[in-house]
Length: 224
Image 1 (cartoon, one colour):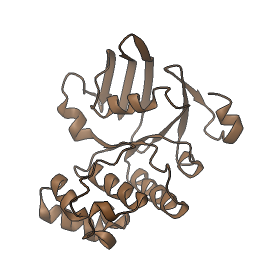
Image 2 (tube, rainbow, N blue to C red):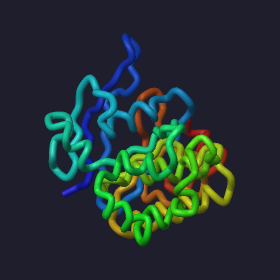
Image 3 (tube, helix red, strand yellow):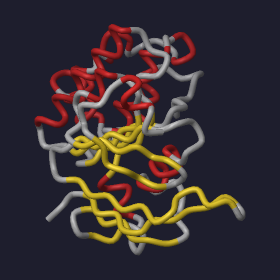
């Protein structure tokens, strides 16, 4: 059984069609990369896959369960990292995490030996979010997305505007997540993140086209 199955997904803003009959599937432990120009619908697709937006039509199955018929499936199966960090700037990193990790013992374990430790979050746990760098905020956002230990991680341009060290740290984390049979759907133009993708799609005019996963640079952007 596939982890993700999407069939004939459509979406629109008013009269403007954004997604036009998209279909996609992903196995456990697979990374699906999506690239395309600004405004082509990538963020809309990811928001729908995370249950934030509703499509006009189509089906979304997570491990055989219909997420559109039973929205609780979105919450149990997916962790979502949007481009904008969903953090409360006036609170510390720890207090932000506590909003999403109600079990203090589980949070402590993640900070000591889990993904939060891998992300390096214990190093700045007491800092207010307003004092964090962009890379630190992105790490915390990923940590929050993983609060329910979801089997699917959805990321919208996670490496955008980050320095090289932070980009590599995020890539290393995603590699570990994939090795543990997590499934990733990612929009990106970062070569380090593209290298993780088992399959690569170009989004153009609301449709997806699978391309050679090894395409880079002008060879890739010429498909837009």
